[in-house]
Structure formats: structure tokens, C-alpha cells
Image (tube, rainbow, N blue to C red; front, side, top):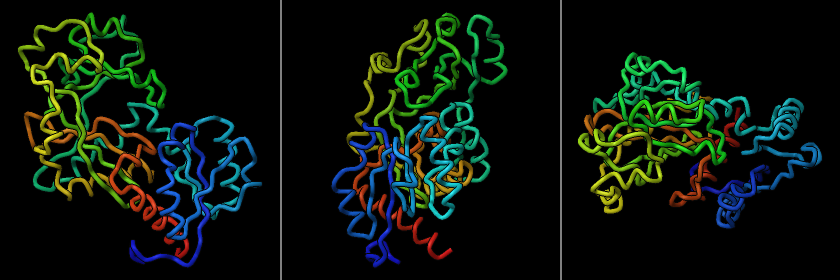
Length: 318
């Protein structure tokens, strides 16, 4: 069936989302577009037994309470024909910044359009800054400055507290556990690759500005990401807003989406991808987020509706 062709069968898709996610994602335009294409999006009350709200052809969710997790797993076991997008145990790997990138470490061996490589930044985990051996940084091929990120990536405010660290004193002041990650100048641009099943779209967004080697040598301690733009004489972002930045090739984006979808075993995620300012053929996956803000995409309504139709119709013909 083509994307534009309406279906005569109706599908009941339940969604369980946190209030903030519900408000941003379940816009009337999506509900109406899905309805016109045979999909009824039904809100799930996570405090009420799922079996009393059934039937569902599919359930999409972004809730992390143990109560919800237990209820979803029990419902799935009793209703194996209901598609769960996605199993909580598969989503768990994205809540840790170490396991998050493990799936991408070997992608550079599989992706080679236009001789490009896709890998991950070098990184090391610091569990105790006071006892940390700084020769580990050198052994990993890292050098200051580095990016410090909390190991937990569970969507809480604390998980977003990132900073740029310039020396040992900066590391000693960190709250562990943290990941120290390679800092790469990347032209002030991040490419966000949105994946919904087999459907992939890439957009560009403003990112950290480049910082000159001369400027970096003068900096001490650490600086929160919110203040990094003050370190650059350029300010960054202009090229993004003016549309001057070259996008990654369509082949690379498609192959990246396919490779990570298979490696992660997930349907809904986005990838933060940067291009190394020193080597335009080198791309790095720096972050992966589950069930991202699809509503920020142009024409997200058909993008997401068509994903659901792919899943539901594949199940029907299986």
C-alpha cells in the first residue's frame, strides 16, 4: 500500500506518555491525520489495568516507572499479538551513556558511502575523580579538553548537565560517575537523524561553536555547555541558519538509521551526528535518544503515521 492510500481496516494504537511528552507529541494534527488513515490513537491510563483498556493492535510508550514496566510486560505476555513499541529492556541501553554508544562502535566498518566513516568519540568512565588515573586519558588517546557527561541519560534534569573540561582540576571538581568524551570541533552544527522504523530523516541544528586551539590553551577548570558559546569569537550557528552547511549524504543517513535500528533493536530514536572539522569524511555519533521530539520535524504527521502503518500492515501480512 502506498503512503497516500487510505486503508479500510481500522487500527487501535494505545499511547502511554508523560504529560510533557503528551503535550508536545499528540497534537490534533497528528490525531486527525492518523484517523484519516485508519489509525485511532487512544490514550492509556497507566494507573488502570491494561487489559481493561484493551484491545490494542499496538502500544507506543515513554514511561519509566516500575509499575508501568511490570504492567506492560505482563500484558505483552498475555497478548502476544499486540505490538509493543518498544520493549523496556531494549530501551534501557539508551539510559546509560556507555551502553548507548556501544551499538555504534562498529558501524564505521559497515558504512562507507563516499568514503565516509561513522564511529563514536573516544571516551572513558570516571567513577571517582579523586582516584582517577590521568594516564587512562592518554591510554585512550584522549587529550584535554574533554566533554563531561553524566553516565545516566534518563531524561532527568541532572542527565543534561554537560560541561567542557580543560584540565585535571576540572575533572576533580566533577560529580561522579561521569563519562569523559573526546571534544571535536564540528563547525557549530549537529545533524539530527530521526528514525521511525524503516523511515529516516535528517535535519541540521545549531550546536557548540568551534573553539580555537589558542583559546583552549588559555582556559582552566571547566565550563557548562550553556556558557561555551561565550568562548568563541564567532558565536557559531550562522552557517546553520543560512543553510550553508552541507548535509550528510542520503546514503549515509539511510545506512546509519538501518544499522542502528538493527543493532539497538528499537524502532523510535534519533541520533546526534557531527562531522569532524579536521576531516570532512569522519562522522561521529555523540548521542542517541529514545522517542525524540518528532513534532519538531516538518510534516511529522505523515512521517509517524506511515511508520505505524508499516508496522501494523507488516504484522497483518506476517
